[in-house]
Length: 563
Ligand code: HEM
Image (cartoon, rainbow, N blue to C red):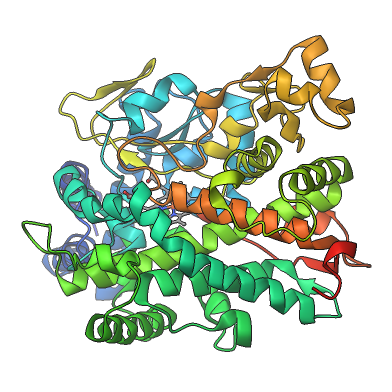
């Protein structure tokens, strides 16, 4: 081929590649069909059109495909790294600026929370963690990003929920108006009256959990037991029962199946367009489908048989008929599954971390035990959610566990949709940017919580009066002597604003009840041979945190022996 012909071919292919790049930049198509057209069909057409300039078809294909795809990828890379990119002024690692596959790769070991925290420590309060995404560690940005007039949910849900094509669960709804409509029954389901009704369901499951501990002579895996409890409780709430994990254990491997899908869900949330390909794979989401079928059967049964108590299902399906547009069965199903996924796993993780922290901080454990004994003396019934809400040390322990080990460590992504962009605190974010407040980094930032931001120290949540009233206020004394920082605006384990965790109040009720009743009745410690560092090592951030085993030895306290 002459030099002229080669140049000619090159220019034509580069021009076609540039057109493809501009199309992708402007429209950002996620459809596999369009991907096929622009990344496979067009270069093949070029092969055919220009093949007579090459000695063989194979040479033509190799040459044209290489130039075409290099042009597309090179243009993308150059633009993302250039000073013309709208996020060019925000710092971050080059690989993060280039592609979201980098974050997917860096997060695959479950240590995303530590990686993003290290980026904040290196680059500051705003870091570019993707070509069009930033992570923020600054209280001033919270309100404008996730507050009342904040941004809608971000595109990571498109990947995470790719298989929910027609009806999405509440948490992944990106349209603000639709989100508000779908959240209405949830809000009613967690108001004060409704919460009071759930006491019967919770108490039954909690007593069942306690008696399962009484029967065991060997160390128990506390994380597994708590998961079974939260799962059974949320199944009762969402579908009127159907799960007996406290009694039988996780015989169907539901947790393991679920947790095994989380790393892939994380990749899909980093690269949402991959979701379109993922759903085309055979046997994809098998575990989830199995779980959905279980929920569907339960929901039908619950609907047919009704219930003596007003559970979550009662509100989700609008049994009282208060909604002008009643929810569809598909919506109720999607939200029922969400209730179990969002409500069980999260609470179990925080509770397990809390018991681990108490076991490794004997002083805090003794303070809590002393408080529980004061409020509920030996032999008395500690089932009193009203009084538990007033116990200062109990609430301090729960908040401290939520601060250090939030079940959603990475924050909840939002998408900037305002034409012309928006000011998020002191940062200008252009339209099309995704942003999150990184909870884990904020919760451990010494500007918001100090001294010892990384230490489990419940005393920081008490007022000076409450601290001095502690039976042994040793560690707490230095807080009041040397001063401390405790900025609760930077405490966001349940997120913030109109799309925050709608189950927050239920979660607190549940955590208070479990901790009080367990501490009242049992002495517990880490099982022999279990290294305390294992817990943090096994804690993984796959958007919702997953946990390892927590072997603990429990023995009934003196006053409860034989009760
Ligand atoms: C310690 C326990 C829990 C933690 C740390 C937690 C945390 C969170 C977080 C961070 C979000 C994301 C909010 C956002 O996008 O801004 C969320 C959403 C949600 N949580 Fe929880 N959660 C917990 C327990 C529960 C419980 C018990 C339920 C009861 C069913 C629940 C139901 C939900 C629902 C339905 C959403 C979606 C809210 C929406 O998009 O409007 N969560 N949760």
